[in-house]
Image: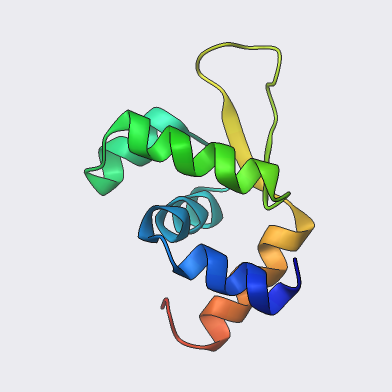
Length: 91
């Protein structure tokens, strides 16, 4: 995907944007924490995490674990999030 296509893909489903925002703001966070902070179900957030991970925008730091996994933005994820901030999608 091109960056523009990827940006559109992220923006097309708000849970993806919420997950990226929470990971950006907290740098290292678990899916359960994101669900709690955003008021979304764990399943909803887990789905977004899988999608973002498949696109190479986030990375799991503890892939050997089955629970309590922690995530960070990848370099690509940081670049795209910076683009969102530049367009004033976030403060």
